[in-house]
Length: 160
Image 1 (cartoon, rainbow, N blue to C red):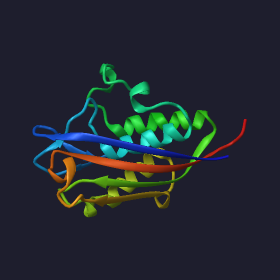
Image 2 (cartoon, rainbow, N blue to C red):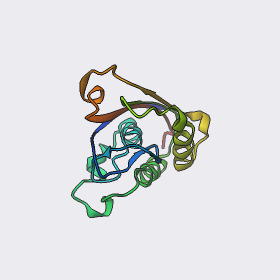
Image 3 (spheres, rainbow, N blue to C red):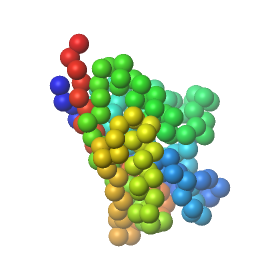
């Protein structure tokens, strides 16, 4: 049975934090504010996987009140979500994702993001698409107040 999941995440930019996207630390004067490393790309993909399997959302499984997830790598969270998917007898067919950020330019980092995500989810790199776009100065991303990411995931769930 094929199932589709959609994910979205956004975080505020702030000084004094690393900017991590897809598990890649990107040089920038600001990073994303959150309980974990606030990796919006990994979060959006995780939300999409959970959604496809009707397993709730990130906050249900990894609440910001739980100190175990304080400053944790979002790739570790993504790996735990993948473990949940495997317990559901589900495998990822493909992922399509988009990061929304006015700056910095991300194209040079996308191959490493794709590789990190594929390795974390134990799938091939050609199953992971990561794109980046701006909002041409509009909205919170355009005002450089934050970043967002969207993801769509196709899951193949074997019937039990």
